[in-house]
Amino acid sequence: FVGHEVDFVKGVVAMDGLPPDDRPEVCFAGRSNVGKSSLINALTGRKGLARASNTPGRTQEINYFTLGPEKYLVDLPGYGFANAPLPVVEKWQRLLKQYLSGRATLKRAFVLIDFRHGVKKVDDEIMTLLDRSAVPFQVVMTKQDKVKKWDQDKILEQVRDALNKHPAAYPEMVVTSSEKGDGIPTLRAIIAGLD
Ligand code: GTP
Ligand code: MG
Image 1 (cartoon, rainbow, N blue to C red):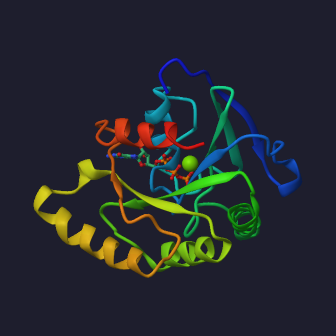
Image 2 (tube, rainbow, N blue to C red; image 1 turned 45 degrees about the vertical axis):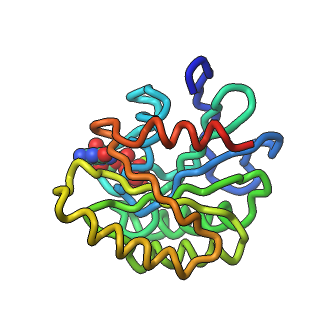
């Protein structure tokens, strides 16, 4: 990431608005409020780049960011509960699923799991969609700073069990805190290594 220009490209509201699929991209998926936008800010070192907030349903478009001239970072709307009118939510959920199952240049989906909550039913459903679409995905645990050390192992075990059922899942998870910076260099290295 160091030395790479990061810029906002566009917010996409329909599949025909996606930028040309001319370079590899990675996306950040997860339940509303899990910390997708915050993670992009932490990775790029730019606090206000992706808009984050405590209101679930903050990101309502597929937001494209350049990572140097050769990659896109894609911030997705959340799935699950959102603080927005139902028809609006249903529209972006449809778009989200279309995107996750139909983007040829999507190299890896990062599925974010809130460390306090573990894998929920909706996460499992999204993972199944990724299996069917043959999109390789990797779990990123978020908000590690919110969970006491002695509670972490049990939750990680639950997540590992859930991942075992998904052929498209990478067995290794990345544990992060966007707040404290843990795991951010590791995730940067993973993304930098993809092409
Ligand atoms: P939607 O766009 O609504 O789907 O949410 P999102 O997944 O993009 O979450 P967002 O990044 O907006 O963060 C949601 C809330 O969680 C914000 O209040 C963040 O400050 C907080 N948050 C995100 N990451 C962390 C973290 O690592 N630690 C702590 N303590 N809070 C975090
Ligand atoms: Mg967001």
